Length: 210
Image 1 (cartoon, rainbow, N blue to C red):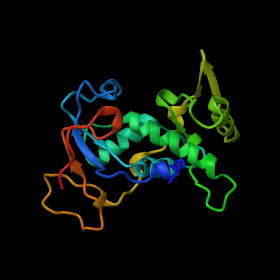
Image 2 (tube, rainbow, N blue to C red):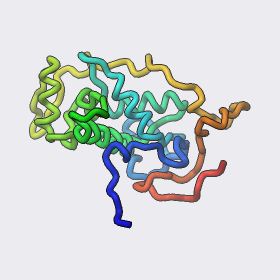
Image 3 (cartoon, one colour):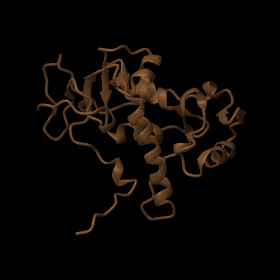
């Protein structure tokens, strides 16, 4: 049977073993980015499913924006850890944007205002459909001013338009901490803790238990 390439939307499906909390190590590709955000080697960080990132993207209203690092900080706060891998979050954000483009004009369109999610420091994302120009147009259509900084572009005064991701509400059963005595119902996926990074970019050090 010939291999069927997954659609962008299919790539956003939940992954086995996630969410999972691991210890940050300097050898991880995400270490430098997380270190700039305040995390240190040995700190707990979380790996999550794409939908947790996409849920935050979906709830950014017109006139507001968010950033990759703001999304990671919000997820880390939810799990009470020091960080959330920004590399995998960035992949999920790009994949969501491609899924929107892929399903546009269909009866099952993927409705996510991805252009309101910026890169760190308010920069436009060249990996979005149409590149920087494709990202710039919908932002300007919504009244944002986009400035050139060298070869890159950013939203002017983007901090003034940041949405409060901390105001979002979440299903409490998505989170499991070892310090707690209760276990979520079987229909909810538990959170695994493991010393190894489960994402392909970071290698594997054993499968999570449970």
